[in-house]
Image (cartoon, rainbow, N blue to C red; front, side, top):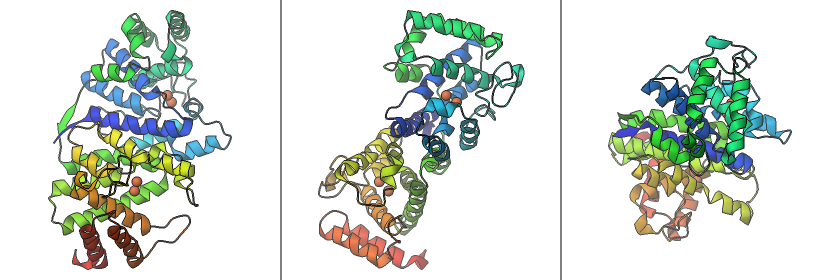
Length: 407
Ligand SMILES: [Fe+2]
Ligand SMILES: [Fe+2]
Ligand SMILES: [Fe+2]
Ligand SMILES: [Fe+2]
């Protein structure tokens, strides 16, 4: 199918926003604003279409290392985590560089994220100077510095003047003279300052970003969506293992049902990403060994809504979105987040729902050992009797995972 990289990037941006929502309560649009400003300065400096396309992706992803669990945990020990504080660590540059290696950029962007805090005078984290700093890293650094140091959401005439002064005063200190000229050409336009406000930034970025699409098979698309899986993994090991093993089980069932390669990979992508929305839920709740209280359960119930919103961004992902985000709906309408009924749940949505429960029961939890196949099936069969899940699918699951050697 025709796969639009920009739409995928939008889904990635949602995923990063979810983590920020969990950590600090709100998403700051820091990535989007940095991407927008970088793109505008890049245009003014004559970057190619391909470079401009990549700089948007890099802008969105530039601080992806700041939400890695090792860093969040480290900073959280002192109870002072925020993206701004994470910006002051070298680790967010190196982890960020490592995480995006599999992203299919068009140009060579090696070390751009690693060097996005370098300064013209050589006083950055890695002491690169002037032209030693790759041009895209210089541009992202400028966008980032403006974003971090000023509350662009509320920019007015006075703040705009202060930003001009900040940029000018740091010529040959943080920024190269060419970069300062580039910024001046962009910042002279009123539209620039309105675009970066919260109400407009998403639409503004969407309107001007260079679009790129590729004809890809779902097998190839799955290698790209692994970027999202990587971000999910970097937050919680538990979700990582759970999704990986669910995908393996989905693959086994797809073989049993003689699915086409295309349908199999679509279903596996859905399984990889089904708990994407858990990025917005605190690890304190996800890893809670005890029974959840009402308030915590109400929060957990939000996760499939977020999965849906992120995946809906991608054209051609309609089936995948349904199969991934219906996995907690029940046939009698008692599930969440929509309370869908049996007639709204297609076969693969039901299959994903049953397998997700089977997977959860047969994996180790902090508070219990994995259940054996027969114990898990007893619980699933009870749910069938109560009209919650599909009994024919449960019969198939019972048969297949009891007789794995037929494959
Ligand atoms: Fe940063
Ligand atoms: Fe940043
Ligand atoms: Fe779930
Ligand atoms: Fe799950």
